[in-house]
Image: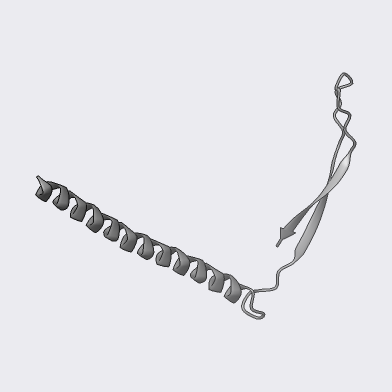
Amino acid sequence: MKQPILLIGLCALAGCAGRSQFQKGYEKGAADAVKRQYWIEQSLQKPGKNPEKHLSIYKLTIPPDPDPGAKVKRVPYEIGIPIVN
């Protein structure tokens, strides 16, 4: 009777150890992907690597709500949308 319980306990411990190894590998892979993306961004921002880019900011005025029966009155406001050409 003690042998099946012992066997189940050993299998459970082995399964936990395997999952731990899997989790460690997954975390290393995720960290590697983040590092790779970081260095891609760094290389794209190096001067002379990319053609000259032009930044334009388009201003857009958002009008107030035209509903006269609205309980909340809104005021017009302006937002800027950056565009890189």
